[in-house]
Length: 171
Image (cartoon, rainbow, N blue to C red; front, side, top):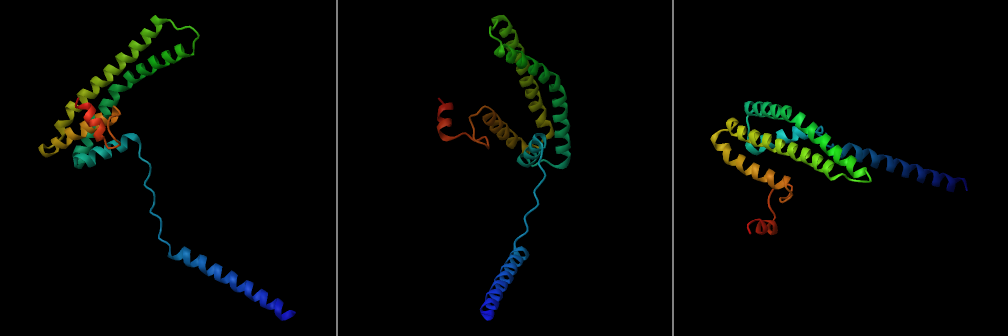
């Protein structure tokens, strides 16, 4: 009886040792996980994407960032106006009765702000070719087309137009 009990204890001990050995082997031989890159802000992702797409050198990246910062500083007050217009619309949505004149004023404010934003983007993109070398200009045109396609919902995540959408836009 004592021998049988010792055999069970010995078997249990061997199993625990084998399990421990297996865990140690796994931990020592597994591939190290790549450290995650820090999350980039939307602005940083955009700068990185433009840099990669257009093959910008470090001077061009600094100039592009400066151009973006100038554009963003011009857009801050316009975006504040847009926000207040949208908040006015939201208040109208919450109300029981909608005054059509108040709605028109709020919609006009949002529309005017959007027009000013689009105008500033137009001039921003007009300034961009001044930063580029001749061989980068064709890539810039292609990038703009993809950005417009993506922002208007017609392109895929890369801005390319799906075949069925391409046939619709050509009609």
